Amino acid sequence: SGGQVWVKSDKWGPFNGHMLHTSYGAGLLFNCFSEEVDGVIQGGAVRFPVNFDSGVMRGRFRPQDGQLYLCGMFAWAGSATYPGGLYRLRATGQKMHLPVELHAKSGRMELTFTESLSPDSVTPENIHVKVWDLKRTANYGSQHFNERELRIETTSLGNDGKTLVISLPDLAPTWCMEIRYTLQTKEGKPVEGVLHNTVYALAD
Image (tube, rainbow, N blue to C red; front, side, top):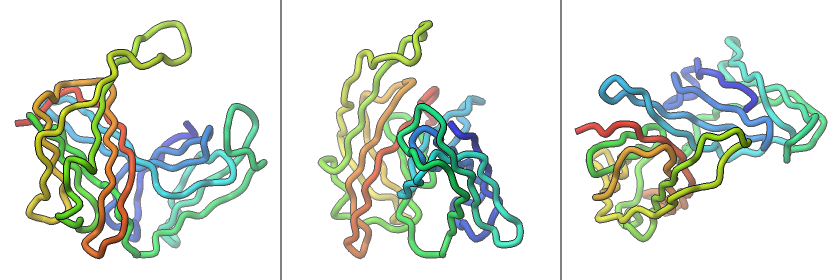
């Protein structure tokens, strides 16, 4: 991690108010989701489709133009190895086709995108959901335990045309979940991504 920053810019549209997570190790930027269920905070993250030449950290929104600026560096243990830099990530107002909301509910996950999706692309074959456990030990990290793919009963599109509803009969609280999607916009453009999240509680 290179740190987090809250979006404080109307120019960033649906991401305004979200927390962004920077990756020093991989030179990536993630949009973070959160929700509160029964007094418990839970959520996840999905990466923006941008790669930085170096690790990024210490993001700040400049009040004068409402855009994101990030410091870059490389010293050790990273895959983005350019010595450093100063980056600006600018929201241009163009369509982004990224998730902005995630909700865990009884028997289903709901994922809302910035723009409308093609109903024909919202099929169980285009969605994959898996979960796994971790062990807390003195080691750095943990291998996956009890990793398994969850059966998707049905998929549907909400009335807003933007919310993907994934029916998961075996959905239960889990530390680690991965949702992979290969969808299309109403115009037929690809919408692909991977979202990682944690489910502590399920809403009704």
